[in-house]
Image (cartoon, rainbow, N blue to C red; front, side, top):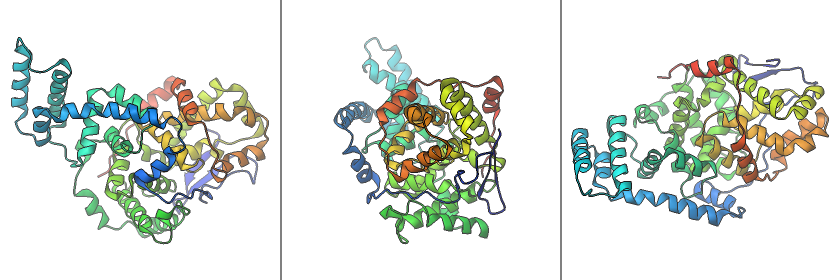
Length: 420
């Protein structure tokens, strides 16, 4: 990789590139976001939905999908599964008896759900440690048919269900400890990490009411970032994490502890490993960038060559998109749909969305020089550019991410250091 990104002694991101002086962005400085949202949680999402012409159809589709939950709710095995009584052996015996019955007591869908619940009980090895019933129900829907769950989330969630489906998609029962977050909140990271977090807390979504002037959001952001830095002591804190946690607080409605767990689950889930992009020397991020550049060159060769001719560094766009999951560059009412797509799939969907965005902007970018391209990318959030989200998502679905054999081996064999 021609450009190198590393941490300095202050744990900030330092950019070294061949781009012309004055045109390289400075990730140390937060973007001047123009978002003026006053709401969090479902109210925030409902403000976005007001501008979605397809919302009624989407709402109907989601409500029909969620109806499957009520079939499970009336199943004795579902209740038993949640309470872990009767035992797995009793559930197994009951399932075997139904299989042998000449006149099944359950219809085929119910019978399938019953077997699924048994499989889940065996897989989890105990009850759900998380007690949020809505998340548990969403998790069961995911396990009934993972492909259906993935497809409906990929197309964009609705406010009523989004947060619970995000949590269900990444939930890892073996990682959950109901006492961990409160324990971490009572601990203190190193002085330097604490100083870095405190500086960025004041610069995270400053125009959003939830984070203004020592509002509740700032304290929540500080607490979650501190806890994550202690839990992942080998990574600590790197700028970019503040956007991800801050945005999660907005979407969740300020559910501080659930935000901590969402991020931790994402970080430990092999499909995502988000915090690996911040690890020292940025090996994981560089590998993602290399995969992106390969696909950029293959799928948009004309635009790729134009970027090369103009001296556009990947740090001016894709690097920032990866490190902040698009939050550094794009308005949050766009990013929420990007996250639906990414969380429904895997970390490589960042590349799919990035290629889809460049296809969308390609004609304009081909007619711009390095200064204009840099201004274009930095202006996306400032100007609150409205993007045709369904078009971007549909384009991203069709993109196949290609890798060299070496790249496939890197991601296949990559083993993050475990956090304790």
